Length: 585
Image 1 (cartoon, rainbow, N blue to C red):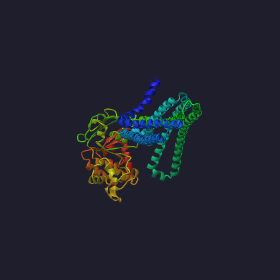
Image 2 (image 1 turned 135 degrees about the horizontal axis):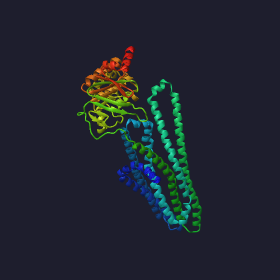
Image 3 (image 1 turned 180 degrees about the vertical axis):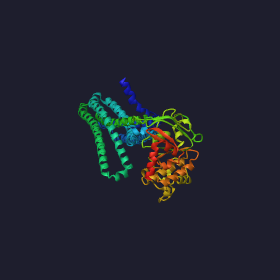
Image 4 (image 1 turned 90 degrees about the horizontal axis):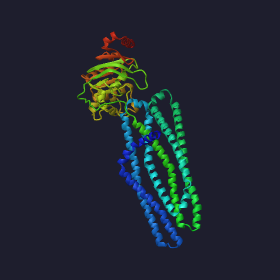
């Protein structure tokens, strides 16, 4: 049973490669034919040398025969060069196509995954999968496959020719081979573990650099440049040490193969020389035998190299397969919720949700009926407000019958069709290292300049944008590093307004705005979203009091709901929040 499980486990990752190999089978077939043609022609040269040397020994060779022999060898060499170009173009080209296919599949897979997945996987680790791991697979399926086929064909054919010349001499020449096989097996097993560690440490180092660059301003404010440099140096040292351990294995495999080949050559020079002296084989046969043995040195050296490439490739293939086996926890049906048919409504029925690895629920028995209008949500930090917004935007899974968008259970319709009903502005604004124009029209790439400017005015960011030297063509830098917090929030809001969807969710997305700008933006939202649904998370009472209804959430439960005056009468917590803000005004 254990062996059967191991067989299935080791075989599973190859399912990624089989369809790609099948798709390019003709390319591979012609490439392998060209490779075998090169091997066959190379095996002919020792026989031609044997013929020429035997002719010289018997004094039967003449100028014409030697010239013909030389021209034939030259013709073979030219043909080998042409065929070698063909197989390199076809097979190495295939390995690059395989790498591209896997990279596209990984990227598509990552786009489908949910927030829980990204909580388990670091960005650096994912970058390592799409970088180093794919390179290792490409090498194994390119040069690794070529070297394996070439070594197998050359060694088998060379041994057959050697046996045809002298069986005993061939057995003597092959005496050191078992030692090489045993050493390769031991070293290849260690190679797998060490290379896996190298890939993991590369992911850690990549993630560290990414975090440092993203938070570069924070690092400078706290004067942590030297500390970060030391930490990066420590990670780099670990990575180098792990690579050196891999290099030790690689360094042992190559010399062992060379030593084995040279040991066989030494035995042949002695025993083969005796056979020539005794007249049991001709001088030409001896030269051909030595040439074939020299051809065996490459396959023996290739054993170590191929073992290295295969171990690296298998390790990386298993890592990529494990990544692609991850499944999104968000379920969706086959139904479609079109924007034209959808009712702007969010309904919760005893909605419960607990984050993975958390004991206490983030939301508990939430019941809401939100239709057309503007609704405010408030409460203490960590009370579950953002969680409710994320569930509505289908960023986390919910159970059947708990959440309804546009009148449909979210689990009965496709996830994209639900998300297409919602414009979302989150707490943490993300801007691409692109122009302001491209950041705003991210959700609608076909939008024209007038449409982008219209939503920028609605978000009260137009005047700020035209104040920049390049206007809408201004590059905002990594994560909008060149902009203030309020400017980033308003650009994100303009992006959501441009999508013009039935439901707009703003999860504390106006917190960095001053009171005057906030009121202006809110008035514009009221005008644009009249007859639709706006869900606004905020702690500012002056903003909440203008909404149609306020919901107070605490410890994952709705404590009270109503308009501003009703909330002051019904909830002491809301009253305290209101009084504190008025005192601080």
